[in-house]
Image 1: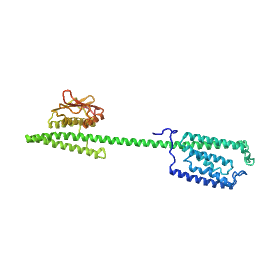
Image 2: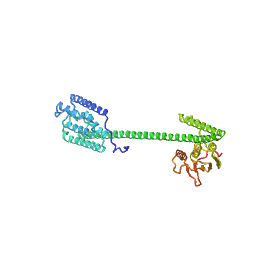
Image 3: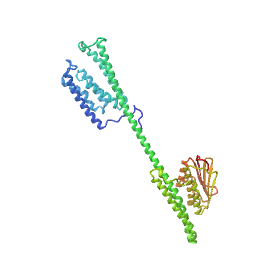
Amino acid sequence: MPSWNVEEWRRPGPTRKQRRTDLWAGVAVAAVAVLNLYLLRSYGYWHTHRNPPIGEQIAWTVVCTLPLAWRRRAPEWVAVFISVAFIVAQVRFSQEQMVTSYALFAAIYTLGAWGRDRQRARVVRLAIIAVMFGWLTLSFALYHDMVTVSELSGASGELPELPSMIFTAYLQNIVYFAFTYLMGDAAWRSVWRRHQLEEQAEQLRAAQEAAAGRAVLDERVRIARELHDVVAHHVSVMGIQASACRRALEKDPAKAVPALTAIEQGARTAVDELHRMLGALRASEPARVEGPGAGIERIGEIADRAREAGLQVHLGTYGEPAPLPDSLSQAAYRIVQESVTNTLKHAHAATLDIRIRYLAGELELDVADDGRGGAGPGGSGMGLIGMRERVAVHDGTLEHGRRAGGGFRVRARLPYAQVGSPA
């Protein structure tokens, strides 16, 4: 589930490469700190009679810096450990206070940037900062006598020397710790925002894959529907004609010629439509498709083939014909074609009535027969599924079922916006 709340998000732990980088970085910082200790001792920086032996100073320098090697694995513990070591090193007057200050900065920053529990990371950082300011106040109270007049000999005297130094120290520490705290939070939020973008990109990729999958499924359904409409109709007509031809050959061979001619024409038409559809499927661009499919103007051919199959067909057009969108015209043709195919295959009918009505902004297709009826209202054949899909695409309605007086009826209503002026 997406983590949109920055406080609830848990940053993943460091990678193996990051842990290895931290290890080498911690060792390098410790080595630089030890080198800097020798440089500071060489010119007497912070030299007092209270300075411990060189061995102890090296030890405190390493203790304050080397834990950075584990800063991203255990940011809370490293920050606390370095903070305590830093204060103890100052109590012991270790002369290395430069690199160790940067190590303290890095530890507090890392806790802000990598602490997985945000509430605990916030509390630990504020506690460290509070302890540091407490120690700063205590150190001024304990060691203010170490600031001699000679050390302040360059003072201008415009303001009291010691209060000015104390105020400057507090100001520097406020800026130092505020910057450290805010930089850690900013780093955390930056990674969180990047995580958000990655989640959104992943969701977008998943949505695109789902859309592509739906598009493939829709295309498969369309291909299945077209194959069914093209093949089933012509093969059904050819089967009926072949049956009539067989009976004619037994009684009067001369009467078999029209049936054979119809079979030949049906086969050619089926092959032509298959070639057209396969050409459209192979085309890499829509512009290469070889023209539109059959439309409402070719419904008469369906009626003619039904007559050749032995049905008494009545085809009527009512209302003033109007230009239709190509997709709707093709859908109307396929709906009528499938209805006639079902009649030829299942109804054992003698008559077929096809009516096309141009209503106000609506095309009605009515195909009825006097046979024994096909599938009921809940029919689930491929033909009815294809008709329902075609009607749904155009926001139309489909009715089908047995008629009260016998036979089966399919009625589809397809709303449309007129194209151009009425025919």
